[in-house]
Image (cartoon, rainbow, N blue to C red):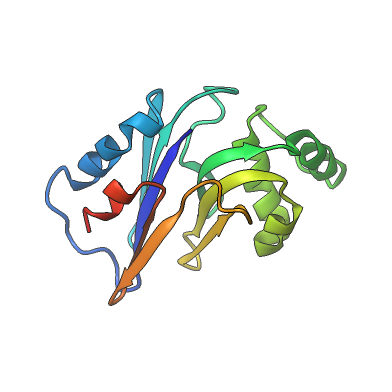
Length: 166
């Protein structure tokens, strides 16, 4: 189990009290005791707590490739099938995590990547260049994904406690 959270504001992020994001990460500690990570840009913050199961070093999150950054909670049952298909299409892999496979699937197929996934998941991909956030959850909703919008602030989390900070 992992924990994800984040916020995006079209006009750029408003200043937060010191330690705000660290407090949000702490609310997710039970969901991911092994690693934590934070991605910040002008209009977005992505948070991740990880329970490291496969490839602890190369599966760290948030994971960034080019302008895309991913935070992910879940398990893909067809990781190896997707990896083989992506390799056949010229993608190269550095590790063995399903996180890397998911992000590269998104790089290849964008929003349509969700149609290729077999598993339980909730994830967010932020494109820093276009300032677009993409969220997805498995069709059965096994992995939680809460979200809300207040004015130009959009925020999401895999844990309700993390959404209460906003």
